[in-house]
Amino acid sequence: MAKHNNNLFFMVALLSSIIAASKIVAVSEFTVPPQPEPGFYKAMRKCFKKISAECAESVVDAVLEDQDMSKKCCVELVHKMGRICHEHLLWFLASHSKSGVNATHVFIRGPEVYNSCVLKLHQ
Ligand SMILES: *[C@@H]1O[C@H](CO)[C@@H](O)[C@H](O)[C@H]1NC(C)=O
Image 1 (tube, rainbow, N blue to C red):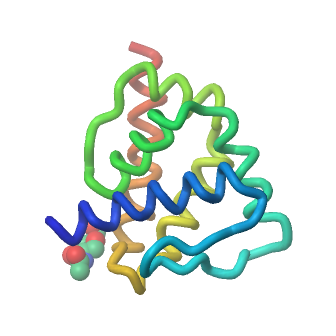
Image 2 (tube, helix red, strand yellow; image 1 turned 90 degrees about the vertical axis):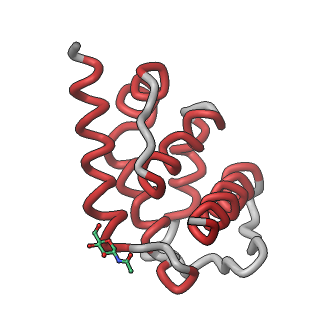
């Protein structure tokens, strides 16, 4: 579990650096993987400008640590960030499998997180 929390911490730090800077920097043992297509990180930065840092962290937490999301962050995820941006984030998280992130888990849990938010908004 400690390893997991450590991952979460660095992932959030790495994400923040991607969101904040136009230049991608590596944080600790996490290296930034090459983009799957040109403009990917630029698109990702745009995605994360749409939601609060608190909710961006909450989405990462929900995917990696199986946490629940608040209705407030679900609203941001579904209505501000949207599914395409969520898929970008999942790819980004899964690309860190060498650093101990379980990619299989990310691709199973990721869509669950999004769908449970959609349900939550209709309650
Ligand atoms: C990765 O996640 C999958 C799906 O949740 C799980 O079945 C598998 O045991 C996990 N692997 C590790 C090494 O934790």
